[in-house]
Length: 456
Image (cartoon, helix red, strand yellow):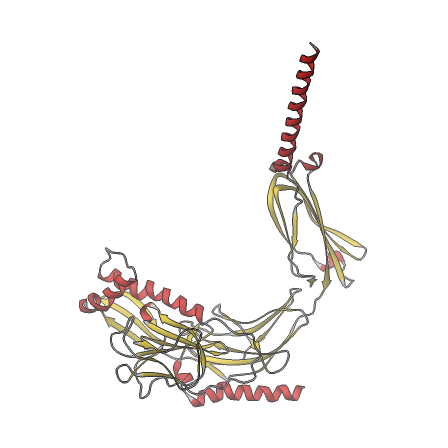
């Protein structure tokens, strides 16, 4: 009988041990008993101007059940927000506006304190707690921004240059904002605190207005208007009748090559090429040509671009093309380059040095090398029959980079010559004009350097 009891007791002990181990494993692996404290993130980067909202985010796997956020300034303390959540939330974000008069911002800094408790049953069902304290230095001083010099005017579809000064010991963002939504990036220029940028007015934008915007880490923002005289330009409106021969020729070939729907009719195939494929090809071009360096620019010497000897203009930049089939408008597009033709398979020569950032086939543009010349200026050469360069090459002025052809969406042998400024197509004619380059680029840089030298 004693042996049976001893055996029975051993079984009970082993069962309890197994149950205890299982319970321990459950406690350590169950989300109900997770042990990670809530994660509290304060987005304000160590500075605050007393005006912009304070941004806080609280995250927790088991869910947040309570929180409290307060601000301490000297001897003053103000609760900005607090709450008990009936239903736990895994993430909660706050943008808290704090009127400066309500906290009395008399000191050089304030302390932001955020507390949170989660829904875990760890810590004897009390949950996990987090407290985060962040000291924010008060900075209510706006950056200093001023225009040093700029091109006198900008033409619709054209380019301009601006040089400006921007100062702030905690500068966060610096860019040029335009009325059509495009932001242009500036590069350091000549001396500390000075910047330079090429900007552009797209042919499709009705109006143009540009400001330099500077923002510091405390949220202070300053802006300076760029005083450019605006010159309107009327571009050609072309009405083009589509023939069955054209639609069944080049268009059909491109549609099949680039994956138009198999059951598409003539006009659907044309729209695929002229709209869908064009958009895809231009997205790639804009991506390639939107990059700007961060090295200091002291000068920007460019000579007129004449890529094709004795090249005759056969299609203009900015041409707004409306396409009709059997009397009905079926599509439209803009021609965003200058078409030049001379002899068959004519030599394409770059007049300025540059880096080859793309040298491949690109849909309607056919074989297409793209060169970067610095300061966000790019040149593009479409429909080439052959390429003499590869991506990553550096070419000197006078290099024979390719030959004209009729690859892509070209009906005859010619060169589609494009110029882009930070991803925006601009008038090639400007960059082929010696006087325009002198007045709008060289003279602006030369005069700006003189102004900066006098200030030093």
